[in-house]
Amino acid sequence: MSITVQLPKFEGPLGLLLYLIRKEEMDIMDIKVHEITKQYLEYIKLMKELDLEVAGEFVAMAATLIQIKSRMLLPQYDENGEAIEVEDPRKELVQKLLEYQKYQEAAKLLYDRPLVGRDVWLRGTREKLDEKEEEIVLEDNALFSLIASYRRISRAVKKKIHQVAAKAQSISSRILEMKDRLIVGQRTTMMEMVTATEDRARQALITFLSLLELGKMGFVGLYQTEAYSDIWVDTKKPIETDVLSRVEEYDSMRADEVAAKMMEETKKIDADEDLLAENEETEEENNQLQMDLGAGLTDDIAFVDTNVDDIATDDEILAAESELFKDDVTEV
Image (cartoon, one colour):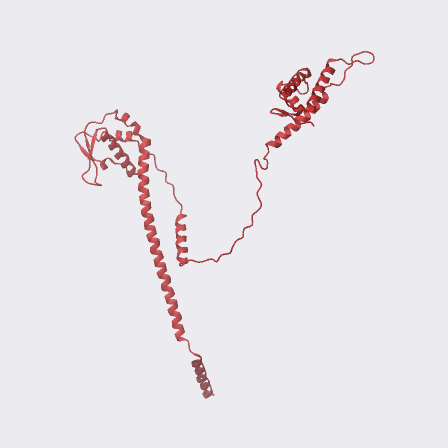
């Protein structure tokens, strides 16, 4: 029984032959049979040394190569002893190789396509689930909960405007601006140096960080009479020009981060206060709504009670009809 011998680079005798042709960079239409035959036989010998059972197709192909090689080496003569041109003995082998190459390329294209179970998976059968119908239980005060949910959703879908803040000023540039105003022997306040008409809070933060940096280096002294009061600045020595190089490591990027962080914390506190006020307002509106609905319901009940008291009985209706009948008879 023959077996299929499969190695990493070829499968079957035609695969081995095509591999050798490509390896030697030969033209498939002009095969050098003597070189291919030699290498082909060496591969078969190697397979035998590896204790691999050589299939009959490999041996048959080796015999075919040897036959083609001999036919190409021996000249052909006619009956008169003259050399004649015969059909290329490689033609049939070339046709087989071309056919094999075509199928090999087609197999590669098919292999590269998505394969079920390897690249894609089919959807399984739909599982039938027993759905149990359960009674819908409405909670108490469902109307008020619905109104409150509607209000929360209405507030949530309000368009939010994204505000892009300008890049914060660097510590070094702010120190350069304040250098001429910080005179030895004169005291000033921090807020007097905040001159911006727009975004004063951000400039105040950068000014505060700059003064802290100058105080750390010993150029100024910072004092405060009481909590949350203005900060007094006392200049101890002239600010040197080269001080800017000493604050480069704490320059614009870090100042931006600190200022942004402090602003975010302030916004967060404001947002929490707004949310608390909003919740209190919502609760007050719900209470007022309940009171209005309760008052309306009370009026309806009182109206119904009044109408019930005013309704006449059957005996009273019969008596009224008799009186009317008597009046009509008297007139006639």
